[in-house]
Image 1 (cartoon, rainbow, N blue to C red):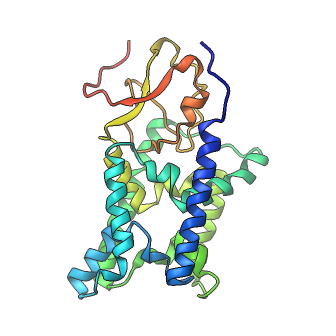
Image 2: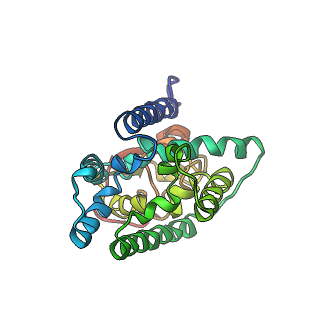
Length: 263
């Protein structure tokens, strides 16, 4: 049966992302100022304990970020990387940056297996930042964080290293959709690995029609392969593949505990 027409989940998701971006921007500028975005960043759940334990820095200044970080980790155990797909300001910025690339016809297709394997780069970034923070006693993520510099660029003169990182982020996001989110975001690395075990996942409901590739519109470059659902770290619960999947081939449902290869 053909799907009923109506407001697509992607239209809803765009406005939800825009709303969260506006709320986060207001909170940052109202409570902490342009250079205070790290106070609300969920990655504080990783960095603030390192700073507090090793350098006797109070965790109170990161209370909001820590609470959000832990909350979205819990959410990820239900819906894979829902924070990345629906809430994250950097994800929203990346979505906007990809538009010029689409208008210019820039397409970069990477195999699902290779794309998922490249997710380990983000895990490496995670460990590097954690170790560097522990050793230096400073928030090392700030050097190249797109979220922080979205606001701080108006108050702080960026270093040459920061300019280089941000240039790569902008150019990469234009060429490859969710470039930073896929392979470099340290918080995304945590959510991505936990998302492998989420209660819900994108599932194939009609395997006979699962090879049409119309669902291959994932902003993170993934889709079900030889398994009944998405198993890798890339799914961000954006539902774009479900919107494009004909005959309701794909649905969001409870993850199958036993992984049976398809015939």
